[in-house]
Image (tube, rainbow, N blue to C red; front, side, top):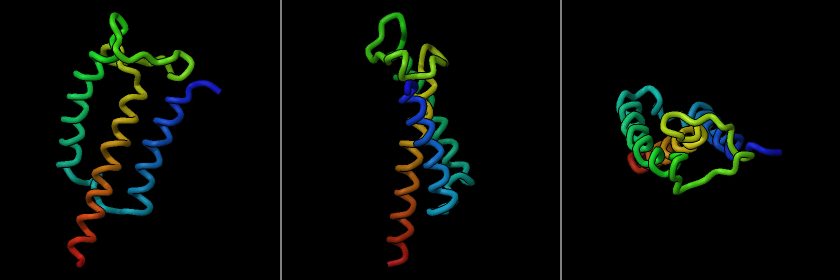
Length: 105
């Protein structure tokens, strides 16, 4: 098949957005604080992931057949950003959902 990481990361990002829009409906995507949080997360991801995946001396290596080959900036596979978005966003969505249920009790 090939491009497994790309497919999995893209599916995770899309499913996370759909989960919010169709199921949870927390309104998280309408909040400025969420987007500021994501900007901070991605800034640190660039620093750390850039160091881990730099092609000149990688700590983490990806099989060429598992990724798209698109690397921005500093050799970071674009899939890492999709995965990071899904992971952080899903965590925040579930946190918001739990917080809303706690308030109902």
